[in-house]
Amino acid sequence: MTPPRPAEPDIRRYYTDVYDEAGRLGRTPQGRLERSRTRELLARLLPPPPAAVLDVGGGPGAYAGWLAAAGHLVHLVDLVPAHAAAARRDHPVAGASAGNARHLPYADVSMDAALLLGPLYHLTERGERITALREAARVTRSGGPVLAAAISRNTPMIDLIRQGRVDDATRPAILAAYATGVNDPATGFTTAYFHRPEQLLDEFTAAGLPAPTLYGIEGPLWPMLETLGAGEDSTLFREAVACARAFECDPAVIGTSCHLLAVATVGAR
Image (cartoon, rainbow, N blue to C red; front, side, top):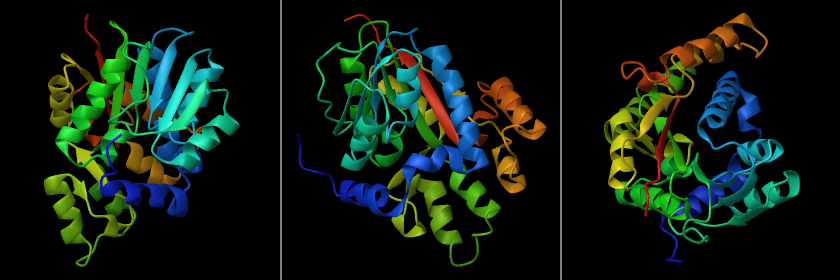
């Protein structure tokens, strides 16, 4: 394994000492919408259980545990050792270890599917993101899917405006992130990259994963859910899910989602 990149200590520190990733998907309306829609898409796009699924950057196991409970044989790798330990402790996964998305500790064609639901938005260099996608494809059997999530380029500005955190002092950094995609950790979030939809598709193709399909996960109504604090049992939440589903592949709307999800099938080798 190559020596850590400069960003990696910042990411480990953020998720170890600053931010509780374990509670993220249940903490806010947007998180609950993300969880609901991501589960829906995974159930649709993954092979039926039992399948060997590699969850790269799976954090403390929010999706790995759900997939394992559904009958999949899930292996989790995460950059943060505490996340891997929590996944082993709290979920019926086949294995969980600390590791790097760019250098996966698994043999070629050893998995039926691979997920990268976090790594791409913590790799700020295009080449590193392509390497991570190639690694996911390497360990996936022919005909199996590789699925990767990204944070939409539009999300930081929309969310910070919603929170009332945009002013003359913060606006330059926010506009810089919108222009370049690279987040300044001084904003409070860790080292991150925000994708335009076409960039995510291009990176899949560059990694040898042609003809990817792109989905918007939360759809355009997630800021409204956050502002109004809509619960999962509310009509507004249910309609936001239905709206996200209706618009999920519309190229004119995809970028309004907080998160994007791309999927492609590994070709014959």
